[in-house]
Image 1 (tube, helix red, strand yellow):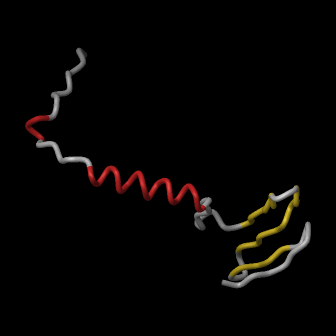
Image 2 (tube, helix red, strand yellow; image 1 turned 90 degrees about the vertical axis):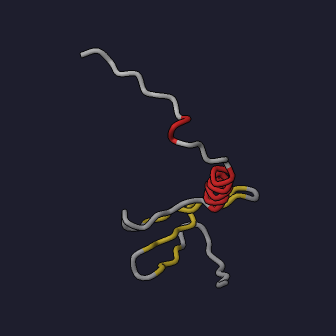
Image 3 (cartoon, one colour; image 1 turned 120 degrees about the vertical axis):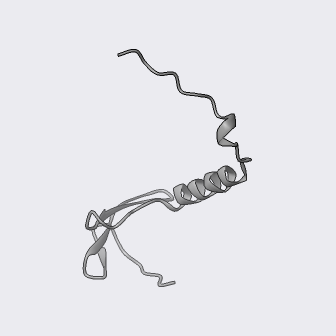
Length: 77
């Protein structure tokens, strides 16, 4: 892990296409601004962990046979 020291309004550049700027420092919180191309997904780590846990829980859900699924009622035309 690379550890850097930055002040407010200072930035780092990653791969010549992602810019991370320190926007503000308040108490124990740091606000970051991230400029990146739209194809680069940016997700907070805790959200990734929550999604991974939800996926694991869904994978543990017992399978239901198609024949046991309720039939969808057709709507009148």
